[in-house]
Image (cartoon, rainbow, N blue to C red; front, side, top):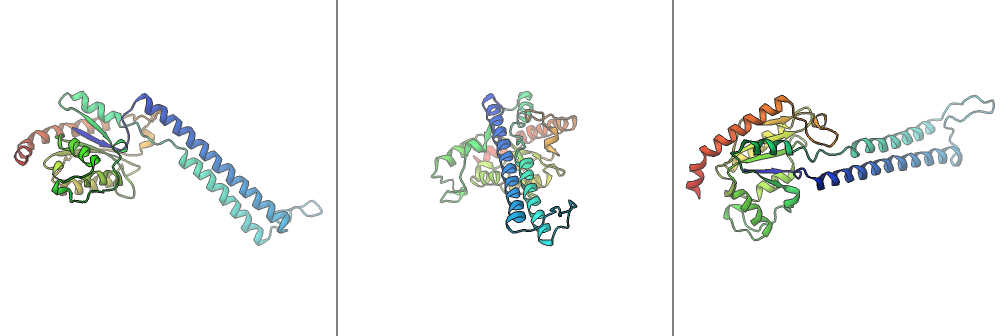
Length: 270
């Protein structure tokens, strides 16, 4: 069974890199906020002393005067700029959950009836489809395609671990699927999707259509994880709940049954 996924399998090196990435992201976010604040401050100073725009400046008697329309505009622009810096800090300094995939790998291996091969699309590093011939001809010229073909050809079943972006699954997965054709034939696939409120279900439905076109059999049971960040511990590892455990067990059971049922069809096609 092959598990194509977006992130590498958990390990000490990955954990070290993830922590380095966190520090880089936080420092980048802080730098963005500081620069935005300095620009906003310079804008206010320019407006106040160079352009003589009264932005809430005190009058001679010590009472605060009214700001002009231009002053409001400049003040609003400066505030918006500072807010943009803070938003960048909050959005981009949040560590991405790269190592939670180990959970489904462990569940598959624990069964004993799957020989699990994890394919990290980041390590596979397929470029955008660059073969000169249609995949159905099986006339590959690039080594990266031949390597990917060998992995999929040797597999009897698949689990796709996918996020949801804009109601669909990610481009890297689509690109990897499109590289091949007959290698996918008559093999079942399970799907683990994750996202926010929709739990990646819309991406999973789109993926099922693509797999069906290649005569891959998407199993009915799947694992759909909503609000993924709420289910990660401080190290970015998934904390599965009972519903997720039950869904994973059902999906793996169905995957094993379909892999055996489709074996004669795979044999006759080879």
